[in-house]
Image (cartoon, rainbow, N blue to C red; front, side, top):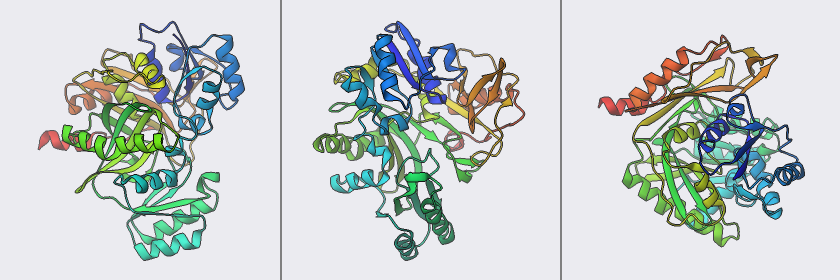
Length: 423
């Protein structure tokens, strides 16, 4: 298969690395890519927002299969355009991508199909939203309805924080994503990320992970796109996985099919494991970032035929194998992230890749032959280990080998799992 991978982040570097290992691959292209992805794929200067240009490239290179990494092109309908051009594509239609593109859409689906999630209300004006928040009290969660690059969610522990978050959404801080706001109940418990492939009918569970959203140690500071992750998440026991499939994933697949928008691609369920069991925080319609990095390190099976089976309705009967080891990734970010940060700071040295440790590039570029940091989240230092503790030691040893003056990172990735290991 000739494959085109869409995206330029750490998730896409991990996907490129894994797809490149497939015996079924004849050529791998990536747009727009990054210097890490360039080690696995031929980088193409393609405007991924120009869907016609993507189709033209696929025809010119006789691309068999397109793998869409990020959510924005999916919400914008890239998969629909490719399907209409009879080009194979991994990723949901724009209608199905509303599961991530609109928090309100997902909440309404949960209400209709009895999927456990926090109580919620939708608002298009600030004052009614504020009145509802005052009535409910804190803690409470404020979400911009649309895509806000992982930054449109405020877990408000005080009333003032909640009111400020509503003002921020309606002031245009998140552009059109904040034109509608979803206010929902605060769920108390332990978070987990759970992934499944779907071909619209059949669902194949992948694995669990746990992300670390807050910017600072001890889960403090503002939310980010994710400062690190590990897999598997011990909270997702076999029993919890089964409950999640029955109560959340299967009704979603059924509901999407019944609504005329069958979901093909990867379900990424953000879960809160509460005293009542698993509850849905939100859906994403692509692999998590940085969860994808730890999943790809642990996956023993060939990824490419699994993605193709999801895209072509042939997932039934497919199996997936995992390495027994745990994987952990530490995100190195530019100082100032998730706020303003300096761009184009030099990265002087990276550790050598080994069988158990890799650095995935998330926000890098080459300028005058030198590697520089261009993003907020820049590097994902990822390692395998017999336990989460071993994986953590290996990942942080890798972090210590990175020479980048403007970088910072959390020092406590995996803390919940480590506490369990010691218990």
